[in-house]
Each structure stands twice: as C-alpha cells, then as structure tokens.
Image (cartoon, rainbow, N blue to C red; front, top):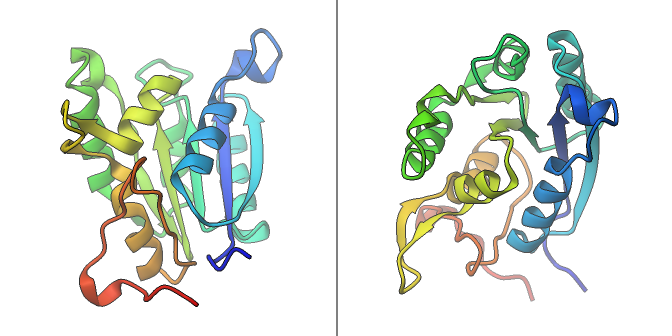
Length: 198
C-alpha cells in the first residue's frame, strides 16, 4: 500500500507544430517519465498539448489549477525570444505571485552547456495553492534543469530546481511530495520533514 500523499500534476507542452501534428511531441513523455522516476507519490497526470497562443496557454493553466486541482503544473516550450514564444507572458498573466529564483537557477544550469541559455525566459509563479513552472523545450534540458548537475562521484555540483519544489508546495498548502533521492533529493528544513508513516 502506498502511504504517500496522492498528487495531481498538470503537464503542458506548448508547440504550434507538435499540436498541429507536424511532428511528434516529446515534451509530455519527457515530463511524465521524469516525474514518475523522481516522485514516490501516486501521481494523476492531466496533460495538454497546445499551440503557442497566449490566451490559450493562460486558459489552460487556469483550468489545470482551478478546475483540475493540480498542485504542480510544469510547462515545456515557448520560452525563447521568438515572436511566437509567449509562455512566460501567459504564465505571469494568471499568477498571484512570481517565484523568480526558479528561472534564475534554470538559466544558471543551462549556461553550463550553452551561452544561449541567457535567451531563455522561463518563469515560475504561484496561483492559489499551485506552483506553475516553465521548463525548457528540449527533453535533455528538462532533466538537467530539474535534477541539476553532479560530479563523477554523484555529488551535486549545481542543484536542480526540483529540490526546492516539495517544500514550496508544503508552504502553499499542497500535498507532501517525497522524492527518490537517486534522481533528485528534496530539501526541507528539519522542522518540515514528516516522520515516515507506519
């Protein structure tokens, strides 16, 4: 029997071409696979594949949080400087509060690989009791920003953003997320760590 809190997570891939069937979407499978490996909680996924349209993105985020009850929403795609890249604007439009540290850390991680990481505009926000985070568009970059970077001995060199996600969700009144440390160890102050259930 799984004693971990159940969680509903929204995953959104924003792409004109993938949503119109020009090519296969790789964002949703990458998000689903990583979250299934990283979390011990039973997860209900609510998935959306939508075009790069600001109003549509905002409406989808509102639906996932307000109607579907997602405690966490991860988006992928649409965060660059091109005219059709409007995911950050659509996300900020539905926010109660911005959480700038997530975007700052994602760019720090990506800068280890490519100088063009400074062109990425990912944001993270809180809406109600939900955390919404924009992630990069490439599956490899998604994993890198969530997990962080480790040295040859497996010690963290740069912390991934997901280490801070469970405690953030605690603080806004969501379920208690528990991670598989081999993938990504969540960090909480000692006073916030829940004793294992029998």
